[in-house]
Length: 159
Image 1 (cartoon, one colour):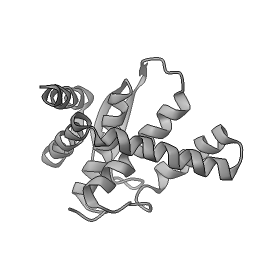
Image 2 (cartoon, helix red, strand yellow):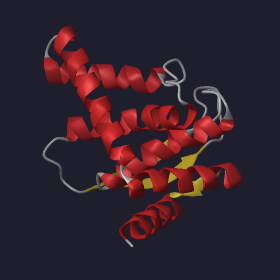
Image 3 (tube, one colour):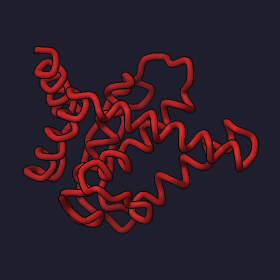
Image 4 (cartoon, rainbow, N blue to C red):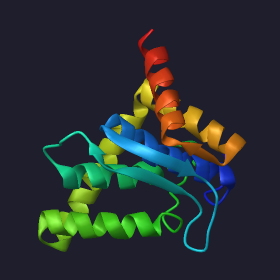
């Protein structure tokens, strides 16, 4: 286990964003744990390259929460402060969806439960672990590499 502010926790956080995005059909440009003045890492998506969804808002919320949930699954702690930027965006989307703050909190909780359920799946969690390991080795990986690691983990889970 690692603390919420460690490079390994950041690798799991960014891998969580990437894997949830890939599981939902969204393509990745790159994933990095290179810190800058604004964030500890970054998962960059390809522009307009994802399969149509019945619910774009839900997909965006799940991807945003994927980092927090994957990091928490790895560390045993929710890094609420470290994920503050993601949570701000989640709260904006949830409020837009729900209409009032009480309903928005329920939407946020339901989406966190849903993303945690997705991460419990063997292939999905295996993909998070593989991508986090690769990020620790290389600090930045391409979307193609992330997709390859995701596909390998899903294949291994189905064998």
